[in-house]
Image: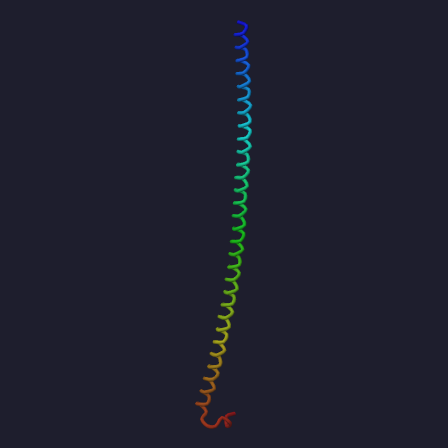
Length: 119
């Protein structure tokens, strides 16, 4: 019986050693998986931050483009308005010259004879 008790005791010890070893391996596996999970979370967080930074940079570029287009439109508008005013002024001057020419021609028609006799 002593032999059976020792053998049973050894079997219990080996089972305990095996169980302890398995628990240790499982803990190591859990620890490694946690590290991998944290690493993946960190990588995903970096990717998300890079995406947000890239989107913000694109937004800034688009805003700058919009502002540049607005500025160019304002310059074109001012240029058009200046050209329009210049054209209107030229037309007014021409109209005034034509009116003066008409007046002069009327005077010539109303005062027959050479222009030097008119005083």
